[in-house]
Length: 195
Image (cartoon, rainbow, N blue to C red; front, side, top):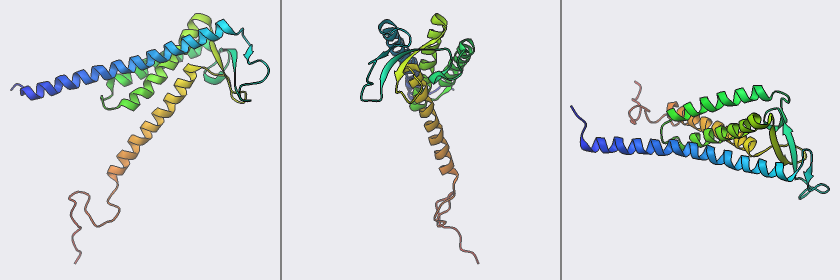
């Protein structure tokens, strides 16, 4: 038995929506990589390694640009392991890309979270391949120096955690019995009176 014409149209719309959603993932990741690489190139062209701007008084007393080479992971942790972090980044990019490919189209925020992490991982991986280190430059003086890619990864992780918590909370709420005890969760009717 062949599907009805209306069902075929719905399938076609769903397929187009899924393609559009998947392309958005790669567009978001690509924009993060582009912005990350442009800002890092600007810093490398503007400041020598270890130089800060402004040199004397930080902006608003808390911030300056400082050109740092990072052979560790985000925020300067795990220095001297650039090759290890490059391998991890490649694995993460592959796993997150496969995961997003399998997500339903309506999981927009989860897909954005994964795209941010992929874009950040690719941005830092490009540095590791071409330079052997990552260029960092956001310096808040009381926090390790970081870059756009690190920011995207961190925001993506927070967004991912929030989305997973939200889905878990919704699933738990559906499984909880009626709080009032006056209505049966299965039928919506009041419980039978006991004899």
